[in-house]
Image 1 (tube, helix red, strand yellow):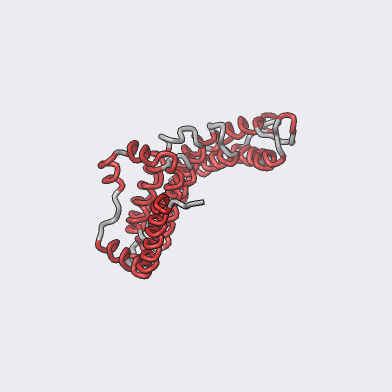
Image 2 (tube, rainbow, N blue to C red):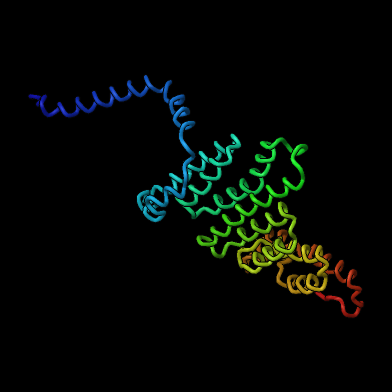
Amino acid sequence: MKFNLSALRPLWTGLLVVTVLAVTGAAIRPFEDPAWQFVRAKQPALKLDSLQGALGQGVTVGLLGGFRAIVADFFWIKTNSVWEDNDLPATQTFIKLVTAIDPRPLYFWQNGARMIAYDMPNWRIVKEGGYDAVPQARQRHIDEEQSEVALKYLREAFGHHPNSALLHIEIANVYLNRLKDNVSAAEAYRKAAALPSAPYYAARIYAELLRRQGRHQEAYAWLKQLYPTLPQVADPAKGITEFQVQSAMAPVVLDRIREVEAELKVPENKRFRP
């Protein structure tokens, strides 16, 4: 049996090329990272607007095709890397880049907004000398600036997740925890509670924020309307699980109704009857 050596020549050529590339790659690897660090230091941060301006988001995503989820995950890992370095411009750029590539995972929007609203103010204050050195008014200004960026980012997310109660809750938490704005936080929680996907606690927190504002009558009406809708006994036939019963916390809601009735001095004969 004769072998046709000329037919095997392309195979040997391919193997030779692969071997040369592997050896070359191994040889330059020790120099790769320092070189990349040098280039990165000399270059401005990646600008999402430039990327979209050059190609357009739709074209960019179209070019990625079915790989956009993988690419977005890769850039999210990169986001966490620059976040660990407290690199504000790079972190903010990569956060936006990730959701431009793949806006479908709510996780990206939520955690990106948290980095912007909660971590970045701290980075800026520390960079300016720390909490003891930076005046309270300046700290407040930084909080407001970063919160506004985070809120704008979360509102953009509604273009991809229009019925997400969790986005409204994320907005509410920025208002509540960063800006100390109970009025805006309450409104965001109300919007969340109105959606079918809302967790039970959204309605409870809304009522509590009404009480903090002295709007006891509104809180009372809200809680009375809420209580009958809460599952109190698990019923597999109706799809009601024990977890749902525990999450609904109907006894807690009833206790709060009684507290508001005491605050409003509601007569015994007019009190809420479950």
